[in-house]
Image (tube, rainbow, N blue to C red; front, side, top):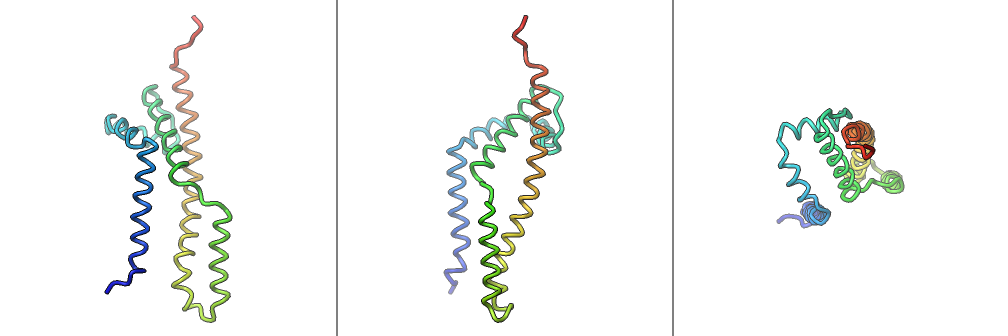
Amino acid sequence: MVDPFFLLPFALGLVMYFYLRHRSRRLGYDDWLRGWKKVDRGRRRRIVRSVRGGTPLHEPDDARLALELIDHTEQMRAHLMPRMKWWLHLTILGFVVFAFAMAGDVREVLPLVAPLALLMLLSLGFRLFERKRVRKFAVAKAANEAVVDQFRPRGDY
């Protein structure tokens, strides 16, 4: 017989998947993705590499697509994956410290506390990676806006 608590993480994972899928459809992610997939694969790769590297694209159409990609990525990140707040980090750390303080033997508590400690470490790693990515996206956005502005028709004739 399978322990029902063993299946709980899988059930929670399914619930999260369907929630995020519903939310992304409501925000228009599927429509944007269909339009993005119409762009040639090599061109998409070049645009994504340029945005991730923080470098500008020289063609104005590619620069517009890069700006669209950056805006869409920022919007989806803000709506689907909000940042973990500082108080949540402190709460998890408090649980870990409290569990070790209350336990007489570390071997008893370690299996219970290890997932929380792993969550904290992963969150910290993702946060550091995210800061680097956001900086590169900002540089790419400014550079591509300059390219688009350079080729934008002026109103003064």
